[in-house]
Image (cartoon, rainbow, N blue to C red; front, side):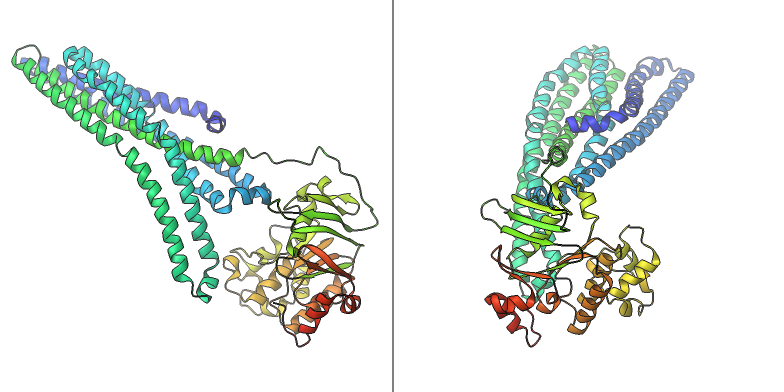
Length: 572
């Protein structure tokens, strides 16, 4: 709730004006049945047509005024709700972009997607509903009751007798709404996760003929969501029918008592007709109030989920100054250990040093910790033990944005966006055309890019599915080369290239990027054979370190991999 107050505060004046206009429009509506009663009971019996026309005109003007005021207030309410939700969505997206990978893993990406879409939509609907009906419905309810007491106190008491029961029904059901809709949103998160995984892995699913398995997995998550929605809807669906039943009972009693009083000469026909109009107004207002409570239950549940993300307070190292390292080295890992689940180390006691312009090759089996080293270097995750230094400065003393701007990066399974090749390479950076062209040539991408009709303006689909795997990797390499970074991190960046193109790429790197310090993670020994240092990882630890020539004779793992690739085979 505090979050909503914070975002609504800049719009309090607009909300107040809108609610005031809505209140005036509602009050105008309340006078219409009263005027109708006067016309029927006082003017019609006198056959005073002129006065009937005058007051009839007044009713028309009041109706038009109420309509105009309500339309204006509704538009103002929609704008305020839209603007508040836009600000919430903006801040939530920004928070998501700067969340650490650890926190992202905790919240989960599908849950973040759900909070950015369905949860913000629920908040938007709640804000709109509260502004449109939050003042109007209570005014029509209590104002209508007041007017019925002026017209017919006896009939008003009949209606008033069932009002506490209606109030109890609304309160009892709506207070259960927030936890129920929290459960619905969590079930929705799980279903979104399954959908996301299936869409992203559709080719793997097809290749392994697992369509039926994944379909059943989706059906299971969808059934759980349906059951949660069913449970919530059964509980909340009781409100409107219960209220309608109570209101119909009240209406029946009013008709019976009203007919009796007219027959006994205790009341007048116009008053009974006006009372019935007020009863309808009050009934609709009470149903609107129940809908507000239902919508508020959903909105508050979603608001709490949004607040969970916005309220994440990550530990900051800004106030801690870590000791400096040796500035003689461009990059140094010193006894670095890290665990994702904080149970067993994924990497342990990793140490190496690189001078400016040197290249480190990393080789190891799947799950040995190769990519983890890259993620720690970029501070996607914070190390548990040890230290990492850039030019003698602990990376925890360097702002993340500044740190990452030093690197040209090609990650394993890296991403291409739905945009032109040029925009995917420049990626919002101010890169000269000459530098862009040189990067494309160095990445061995010029032949296929300039062979396209639109060349650099060729539009890529999301993830680059309209180009081959090798072409995707060369575009990604162009992105890394284009900014002339101080450091280069290449994670399995040439696995889809043929050996000839890979050899040309290595030569271009050696010739053009002699002053760039590089870390290359590879499956092919040929990709790291000329590195100044090569480390062999085994279950998160360095099992061997040295040059290619040294490792062939000193490391059984390296020698075995080297032998297996003699015929150009890839490492499994």
